[in-house]
Image (cartoon, rainbow, N blue to C red; front, side, top):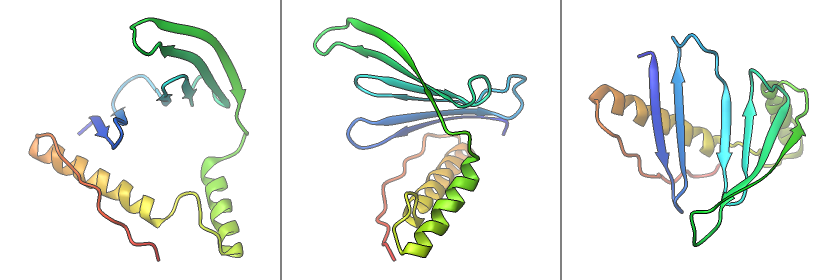
Length: 135
């Protein structure tokens, strides 16, 4: 399989969309988060190190779009995996809960398994949230 369209629906009307293509001639690594008042976007290929914060939203009770300014926020020039490992070791030293814990890892693996199963059956899949017991 060289292309994936993955739509995720969460509680409280939240959703996510992932599109990946390994064979595409274009190299695109773009992440966009849309909120009720603003949008944030990071382009890991073109705008490395910059998060664009768009002050854009739809006015409640109407379909009027409000287009505000675009703010560029500089991101630290650090390797994400190295920083994640550093944070994990820091938490081990201080017996603290890491930002990304084992339960979140289980959630990610469950989502990936459900997506693979859905693709193999060529039907929409459904994954209910299972409880993760913290150790």
